Length: 288
Image (tube, rainbow, N blue to C red; front, top):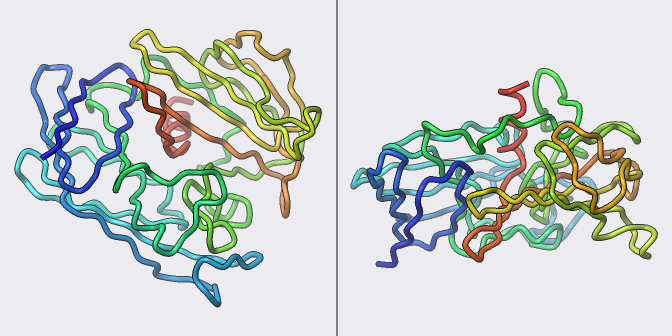
């Protein structure tokens, strides 16, 4: 039985697991929580597609996925929905772990991975934290003006482009879209140590896509991305302070409705794992 050993840090831990894997997670107190991935499953519960995995303009597919875990010997089941309002979910606190249940590979039985490369590398993907700790050691600044009273699925492009939502009914969406007007300010949620366009109109690409990197003292890196940006507000590679405006969002190759597309990755212990940007936005709402 493969064992993955992780220790609680002052930043969120991303982990991918195969069925039968065991995560041994050491809490800040020194106690160890043992979490085994027993099973995973996914199913469509609503679609307008004529044929699965064939894109249709403005088509919609909503699905649910679940996993069974054994936490310290006790079996529990987690279940999520995408792309409904329930996409903006709360983490579970079970057996001394705070758990964000991000994805299962089973969804690719009926979805494709052609809109952002967000397929998990194993059977399931999670974010884990000691529930006595924050997701990071500093308060987060809003990444953009936060819609009130919260994120609405109908304002994620045409109502489906939350994280892992089925773009045009078919492709898992590798980011979180938030509709807002061209020129909407984007701010650094945390200090950014390096930032740049990795795609741009000036380079000959069809879009402006930005990447910012924060190096935590514990060795982890957070990689933040924003796409469809109208323009940068500051020079590339100049460090940014938390709350500083770095760009004007939306408007470039934004399709049916102007929006910005947000991406969140954690690079740690030699692995880079994508996670739902909702985890960050949830914390921004809590702290604003």
